Image (tube, rainbow, N blue to C red; front, side, top):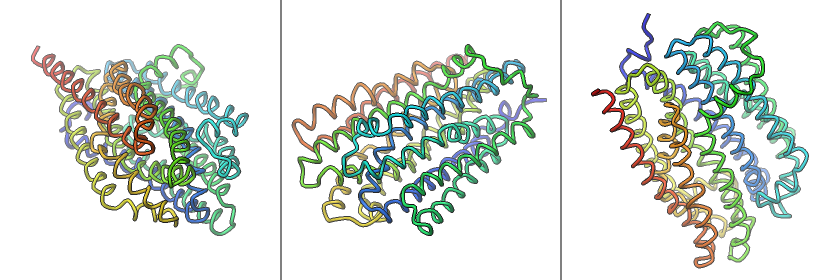
Length: 453
């Protein structure tokens, strides 16, 4: 019996895989935005700043969850495509092992060294009393967050994108409901937001575990597949390291950015807390753009990885070109919102001073100037990851996150002050887009050459 991934029309496959994946990402995004809405409207500028200084750790969790989702799911599909069913089953079990391991690796340091880490992330003395309890509660959810975010990748690769969406949607809707109860009704403030996240992620984890025990169909799962296998962990982490490196380096960049905003904001008319608060709002809002990019890229992954394993290179190239094109179009729509509605977007997350909204206009319009090209980093890196070509995926991230953004954050503000911090974003985006575009064109030409042979 032929697999639809090998025979179905690419556009139809993209609809069936990308729409549930996109919906999952958007649901997660909206719950993050609503979470920020409650915090901002109750605690104002300080609340928005508090979530911002915790955001690097959340970004790191996102990075590792991508590694633990993309790595095992792609490895499973590649092995299924080549006929290695037993190996595919081991990838599923190994995926759960690295999810738990990564969650613990993040949780323990955050619990033990909360305040030093928050200082490292750019926290001011004013924000610290609000950020500390939130960070500690959020850290307790890290293992659940890993499984709740990574598990749906494997479920989607198993051919159940709708259940994958249900896992994410259930956690997100529950989080929003609990936010309203804990923050607005019970008056727990930012602590309530932390507990809402912890409970919601635990429920999502339970749904993932239930599916694996009761409904998994692509591979007959056995208990032996879930035994620790460090070699296999390393192999799957190697496949998923591309998108993980992308988001992991974003966490480092956010630390650089927060500290630059803290230092140069203090020298400006706006002040450190206003700059950090605006960045906090912008980071959460920009999860919408990231959600669309990640959703489309995740939908591409099972199609591209399975067909690459089968040697159907024309289908890999066709799917990738369609997804990258859609990502650029979506990015342009986000660009228009950021350019024309920055004050309205910021005001949704609470009131502030005239300076607060003035800086918000500058941040959205300058820092996100090249947001239409930003999606190339994730989508093209995901294209390479689906083929197991991790070094190219990492190379794209290196250009923006390491070679250009941090040096720009160090050098430009010395000449242009706070404006130099903002212009670092589009300069790094342009360098990344040129690199990604050239690599993508070269790889497409290579795939087309293999088809002709």
